[in-house]
Each structure stands twice: as structure tokens, then as C-alpha cells.
Amino acid sequence: MQPSRRNCLCASLAWLALLPLAPRTTAESLTITSKPTGATVEINGVVVGTTPCKIKYPGGYFHQTHTVFGNRLHYALLVKVYKDGYTSREMKITEGPFEWVSLNGRDHGRYWLIKTSNVSVDLEPISAAYHSSLRVPPAGNSMIASRRELPTERLVEIASPAVVEIESSEARGSGFLISDDGLIATNHHVVEGHATVDVELQDDSRLLGKVLYTDERSDLAIVKIEGKGFPFLPLAEFSQVRVGETVIAIGNPEHGAVHTVTRGIISAVASRGGPSGETVIQTDAAINFGNSGGPLINSYGEVVGVNTWIARKTDDPQGVQLQGINFAISSVDLARALRRFAPEAGAPSAAPSKVKTGTISVASDPGGAEIYVDGKFAGQTPSTIPLSSGTHRIELRSAGRKNWGRELDVIEGSQLTLHPILEIQP
Image 1 (cartoon, rainbow, N blue to C red):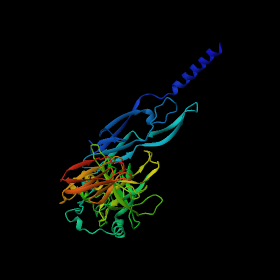
Image 2 (cartoon, rainbow, N blue to C red):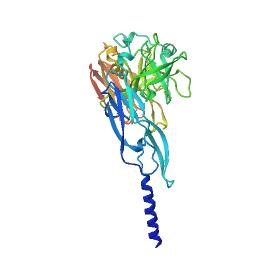
Image 3 (cartoon, rainbow, N blue to C red):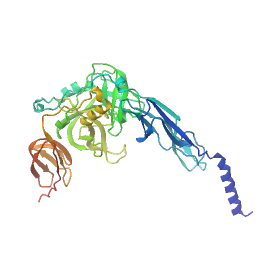
Image 4 (spheres, one colour):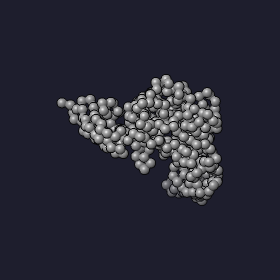
């Protein structure tokens, strides 16, 4: 037999020898049930049905494959089950990653396995998990100008006892009490995938926290600890938030002491856009890993936002951090989440402000110009600034460019936009 034909025959025999090792292509099912039924099921943020829910996956997602022909699951699966009027549940249903190497030793990769083909969850009624009425003291009305701003050391003394450290098996972050009976606000990514977390108070006592509500889109979550008489922080009336005002951030950064305090200003207020329309606050107060979920507090001791993320040069979470560009989810979005979580429990809605306001969105070409409102620094372009009704003088200043100015009449509920081109200084 000629060598070439002999090689072809050997290759064919080798191929046939491998065929019995190939896994069956029959799919297997993942079944998700709940009490009560009719709950929405999400897998990795995608709605896949309502309970009882059955999803077909290749058998290789459940059992380790031994050949290159097997189907492998190349990512972890996070299941979220929720229903109006009930607490939500999240859980990781996969284990891994595991390593695989092909028979020739050249191909390799990672894969995950689904731990069980049947997932059953019990959803607790919110009325059973949360019994009291949540009230936020009214903040921001016609008397706001007469309120006395507190020095930083006094703010810390008042606010710090309400800030907590939150730990799970996979994450560590911050949170803060928003009611005297143990309701805590934090970030979704701090408690993601957990029904319970450990909560450490300022006096070093550790309590079990039950995760009652999470929302991946807004990155907000609500945790409950048992007890009464806890110190708590009120939410600010968001129409009174001003670009340029002083704020402090309190949290538990990695490699730092607990209840670390940093100070800065509100650099900008902007909308995320999209149908949800969350509002974010940009601040130059230092925020680091572990600060997530902690409060951003104004000079009156009120929460204007939930510290959430740090700007980086790339989308890589390990990318180079940009200095002085940090973000918090606004108090108005936290109030909205609380109303969704427990509307019948008296979740706070912001007290109607007697100050009539509108908003002005200011951009410029080039960007980064300083904004002055009635002669006072209010941030840099682009920014969205709430203003009281009436006439205001807006000025933009940028090095090497001519100053730009205009008087505007702001009407209640109006939304004005400015985008001037700053001329080069001769």
C-alpha cells in the first residue's frame, strides 16, 4: 500500500475510533419553579419566561464532556426570580470555571457546569419582610436658604453611625441606613447573587442582612437587618441639588480604614438616557473599591446620591482610573426604587418643593469650560443644572477663549439647552 493511502486509512480509523466518545446531542432541561407561581425569570439579565419555567440546554452544560465534540457552557449563569409584591431572589446556578484541553494538547479553554436541573425558590411577601412605615423627613423647601450648613467634622459625626459595611462571600462594599428599623440602601453589584449578606455597624457588631430588592439596571439594592432605633440618613430633595456644592463620601474602601471620609463638590448632574432615565451625579470626592453603596452627603447631612462607580480610560474594570471623575446614583432614583419596592409601606416620595425650578443643560465647543451662574462657579461643561424660576446670568470661561455670557429667563418646569462655540482669544 502506498504511504499516502496508508496515512488516509489511519486517519479514517482514528476518526471512527473517536465517534463512540462523542456525547449524545439530546438536550436536557433546566426547570425553575417558585412559590407563588407566575414569577418572572431572568437569566443573565434576559427574561426567559415565568414560573414554572423550563429551558432546554445541551447535555454538556450539565455534565463534563471528555471530547472536543461536546457542547460547553462558556460563562456563569445568574438566575433572578421576582414578582410584584414579593421580595426578589438571585442565585448563581453554575460552578466553575473548569479547564479543558483537547486530545492534541493544543486547544484549551474554560467552561462552567449547571449545578442542578431543578431550581425552586420561595418568594416572601414584602408585607411579611417589611412591617413598618418608611418616612424620609422633608428636605428642600422655601426655607432651604435659611438652613445652616454644617462643618465637615459635624457632618461626619452625624452621618457616620448610619454607614455600614456589607460583606458576602464574593464582595465587600458599603451601605447606609435609611430607616430606624434597619432598612439599608446599597448597590446591586455589592449584593449580587446573594439572598443574605453580613452587615457590620460602626460599633463593630455584625448582623445578618436579608436582601429584599435589587435592580441591576439602576445598580440599587435594599437590605434589611432586624432591630429598632438605628441611626439613619434622610434623602435630599433633589430639586435643591446644586452643581458646585460641597459633598462628602463615607465608605469602606479597600486597603483603607472603615468609615473613610473624602470631600469634594458636585461636578455635574446628568441623565443616563434611555427609557429608565436614571440621573447620575459626578463628583470629585475620592471614591475607591469598597466605597460602592455608601452615601454622598450634602452640607445639611442629607443623602444626594449612592456612590457607585469610578471613571476609567477604558471599559476594562482594571483600567487606569481617571482622577476626580466619580459617580453616584441620585437620591431621586433611590426614592423611585423604594416606591417600587414597597409602595404600601410609605416609601418616600420627595416632598413638593415650594421653590419653582427649571433645568438648563450647558455644553460648549470646546468642552470643559467653567460655568458661572450669577457670578458663582457651578461646574464644567457639559452639565445639567437645576435653577430657580427667574432671570439668571450664565457665563462660560475657558483658557485661551473669549468669555461667553447670556441672561436667561427660567420658567418653572422648563428645560433649556445651551451649546455655544467659544471663540479663540486674539
